[in-house]
Length: 130
Ligand code: 9YT
Image 1 (tube, rainbow, N blue to C red):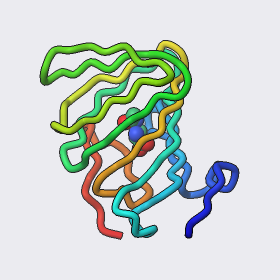
Image 2 (image 1 turned 90 degrees about the vertical axis):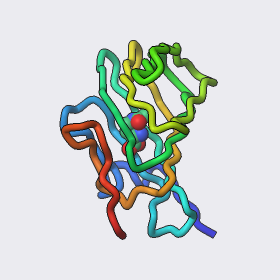
Image 3 (image 1 turned 30 degrees about the vertical axis):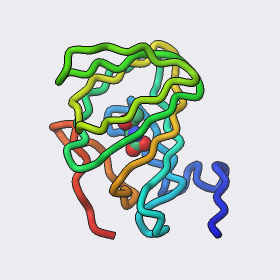
Image 4 (image 1 turned 135 degrees about the horizontal axis):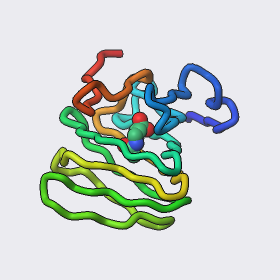
């Protein structure tokens, strides 16, 4: 069994800040943990807009604090996000993520991220090997 506490992830090498400062991702479970998915406790900072395209991953995101919106650019649909809302990018949708109040999200990735991924210039996480 694996036990993790956010306190031990904070400020470790599993605590990743986006290069543009828009988000911070505390990566609780990674590829090397062998679960088949990774799980992150992520903060999306108030007032930010981030273009994202997970071309190589499926991601489910459950908002537990804050508020904002996701604009699905492939389908032209904008959805308001608040505590209790989940979105799952089962079609690798290109999207804009905007936070009005800092949002805390539980994010699950399949395949799992290995640890240090940040978005490239196309909003994509590369597929990395362990
Ligand atoms: C919700 C979202 O995609 N935020 C960007 C960071 C990412 N979820 C991560 O690596 O935790």
